[in-house]
Image (cartoon, rainbow, N blue to C red; front, side, top):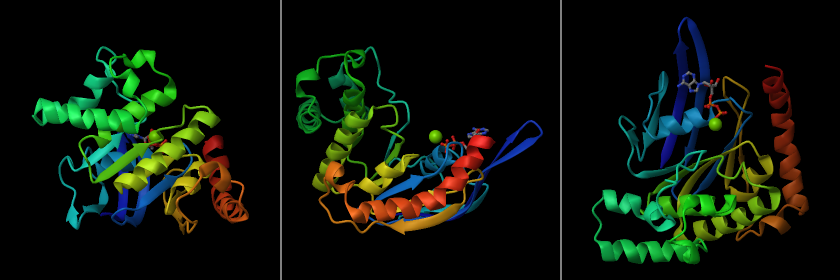
Length: 257
Ligand code: ADP
Ligand code: MG
């Protein structure tokens, strides 16, 4: 569905040149849950912006269903790191925005909104404003707002990084439940290795900047997964240690930089 072929991205700031990504190649198949982990500043958000067509690679190419991404890719949903909910609109209005833009009939908007509000456990909060919601509820609202227009590929940029551990665990359960129900393709960005392994079919490990692919690891843990139980199994712990060995030096490097 999405393929990176030798993608390099450089930024130019006055006389300085920053290489954010170098020669990144990997692919995501239809229906897969793929995570990208890497230390802060290694080019993860840059990667999503490239996939969305918001900026162009300096070298290499990104293919979406076999075609090079040239302009803004409207087939995908992009949940940015900050949730972008409109504070002065109700949860309901926030959720149906994409449908309004597409001129979906009101009755259909209502049906879809009711479905996704319920799916995300927000049915009693339709008339609330975002600032009245907890952190986890805001995340669920932004997920509903993206899923409602049925993007084929959902990209999520560190969506749960600001949540405390227990809320995060519950969000993992919900995301897996929704993913299994709707069989979406997901590209998930995180710096949290436990989260990446828990959720994914495949984990792409990036080095410190410039982000290069250090390893691509298949996570063959059985599904459906219970995040809390899974994390205590020997199989999970073995994978965790294997990936952590790859990441450790790069996290030190990015902290020292
Ligand atoms: P991550 O999401 O992994 O933390 P980013 O993709 O946000 O990292 O950034 C990677 C590097 O590219 C950083 O050094 C950042 O400062 C730089 N960068 C990102 N976007 C721009 C931009 N528009 N202009 C200049 N430099 C940028
Ligand atoms: Mg980022």
